[in-house]
Amino acid sequence: MESLRRANAKAALPVEDLARARAFYEEKLGLTPSREVEGALFYQGSSDSGFLLFPTGGRPSGQHTQMAWFVKDIAATVAELRSRGVRFEEYDVPGLKTVDGIADLGYEKSAWFRDSEGNLLALGQLI
Image (cartoon, rainbow, N blue to C red; front, side):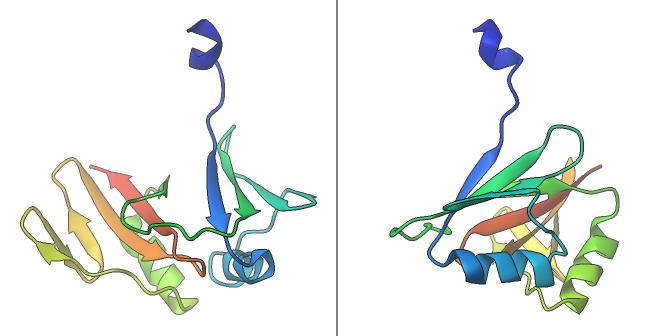
């Protein structure tokens, strides 16, 4: 479908407490909303990327990556976020092992953390 191929895709993350989530994204990740409407916070990234937070009564599963940022230096970004209090997940299962929070997947390095609402977020650096 031509209209979808030209459309911008953006993530929508559920939150139980919008104020708590806003504080996490501002204090821990250094992000401020680019737009606020009743019941949603919009965040603009580079180019046309971005995401929104919306309140819901349900909980995110946290069982899979719900959104990722691709960065140029994952080790430096992990270190910066750790200095702000972000805790990174550690994995040691067949096919996935992190070392100091970072996994080398062969084609990409990745690191995962949870926001204040339980959403599983990731950093990626293409190799």
